[in-house]
Image 1 (cartoon, rainbow, N blue to C red):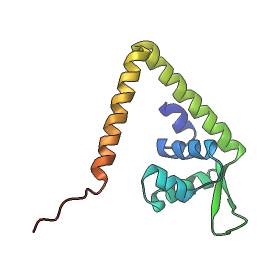
Image 2 (cartoon, one colour; image 1 turned 180 degrees about the horizontal axis):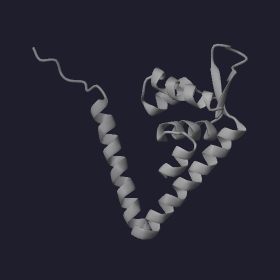
Image 3 (cartoon, rainbow, N blue to C red; image 1 turned 90 degrees about the vertical axis):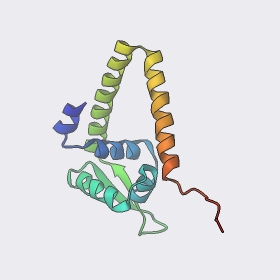
Image 4 (tube, one colour; image 1 turned 60 degrees about the vertical axis):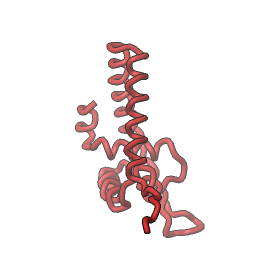
Length: 130
């Protein structure tokens, strides 16, 4: 999995951004930041690199020119497809080695863990003591 990323000068985080752009219509930098639960500036740095590599381009919203939609260039589409295929092959290998039931169990456990981490980060309503 690391090989196609390094060959295309991508981090895994940048690939995830490419993937989101590839699978979502009218996505903005802010949409990605909200979905990934990171700051807008963190995504901005990643997108800047993707712009410099000519993997993405921006198109202003005709109703609000301040809002910029992200799109993949032809090169960005190719890279996203190549890395996605490599990840799929890697995952298929693990499924073949471990079996679908074990992989399903691991994914469920990871989902539960992720939800618990998210819940810990949310502010809790605590009763006020007098």
